[in-house]
Length: 132
Image (cartoon, rainbow, N blue to C red; front, top):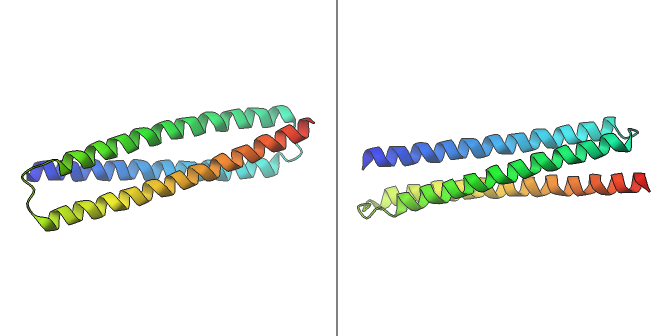
């Protein structure tokens, strides 16, 4: 039982770390996008198209990774709560607190992703306006 709890705790920490890494990567990409946007304000429309394409690919990869993390988190949480021999109420409360914290972190990551999508949409519109 103790080994299983430790393994679950380790898995949850790994998932949390991966989620934080993805959030940091998303922030880094956002900063890079903003920096490039400022540098390339007078740049060619072709370079903007390449930038938008690469950002769309990176965004798709982040969404894919986020989906995998969500699935792994749900599976891990479900596994830890499916145990019939958990009778320690304090332990269950700690698990719920960890789950709620992970859920909040996931919502924050989704918000950051949505911000990046909005920025991408804005850049697309900017590109279209430049082409017209």
